[in-house]
Length: 154
Length: 167
Figure 1 (cartoon, helix red, strand yellow):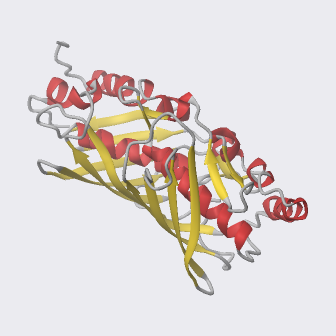
Figure 2: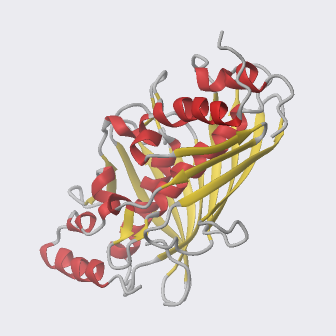
Figure 3: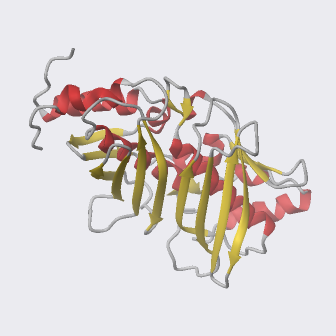
């Protein structure tokens, strides 16, 4: 449960100021083509469009589950990169609101900490496509940040 | 129109085609439709390396579970539609009760417990063999009559489950 390789990767990524390295340690992030980037000075997480993201072939639209996945990963990358996390944050729950259908394009997400507690962090995340003022989905999630014996999916 | 499908196996095969094979992301995850009845849907996700969120432990990432629970809740909604219409997820909450054991499949069981003219309400659990010991729980609401053309998946209830489906 240590997430040792990811924390090692985080130290390495910090040294090189290259947050993109974090995604390489996570098989699911690689498979989904979800990776953090900080080229603009702001930490963003991008899900590159590929055909297997589609959930509705008629519209066409990206699968809602993949937007939830992106928002969750964006929250995790944010906690790893922007806070002094010493362990991999463990997700407790996430609520995703779907605001618009997502077209077959890249989706970008940002995250911010709403409340940082000693053990629990509340994170807000938002995803958009070409227009940041028109989010396709938002999410609120809770993460445990210290206790080593609690549930974790990451 | 399709002939009436009477056996559970035939129904499962049809729902597999419409809700997994025909939906690129569900197909990519390899979602298997396990069971379907009016208001109820069950799917299965096999563990595989590419879906892992923690390479140290081999535990699945949250994303594949989110996608399966969304898909499974959506399938439960489809079985309840009196008239074919497009619908879309409005919100979805996932509680991660405990990590899924690596190497074992995860089974999702969803129920659409209420449907109105505009909204359908669903609940789902994901477990690995013992429904009383879930790895995740979900609550999803769906907006009915959204934009777009009706897909065959959204028309399937009338087509297949229309007449007195009991199980």
